[in-house]
Image 1 (tube, rainbow, N blue to C red):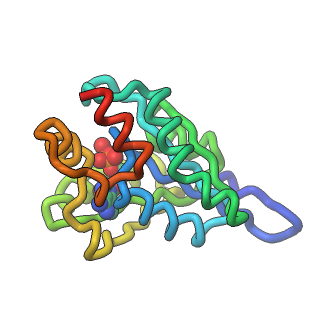
Image 2: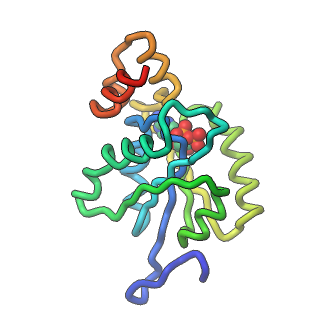
Length: 172
Ligand code: ADP
């Protein structure tokens, strides 16, 4: 099958977790921690989408994700971070991925995710989108709010790692 690699006779399942990650939050990390256990290899995919006018460059966002997810590699999980400016499903197919993970927070995420999943399914029916619900603790955490709180000199460390907080304070 085109979307799974064969390794030692068993299906080797590759998943991707795409997002803007501007910057990565503890909510994203919680999704990554859970997604990496569901596949043999997880590619956290940082979207190089200038139309969203991100605060951090794609290189910075990749570096921040790499830093925050390094502990999972140390725990033995197979994970890498890549960026793409390509169509998500095309990127997923090129990477041999069969699963796309997305996180769901409030009902407000649903409409957008529903449309995106439907369109992606038409473009590439063999790639399945799996939704992981945000945990109670991170339900309200978003990169946008974290940036806003940081701009107003609020405490952002409950929501992002120390490394991300330092980068945010420098950037804003
Ligand atoms: P995008 O621009 O693709 O929405 P984001 O970086 O904002 O990029 O989000 C990437 C994915 O992570 C999305 O599926 C989003 O719903 C999910 N996500 C973001 N914040 C959280 C959170 N606090 N808990 C769970 N999922 C989240």
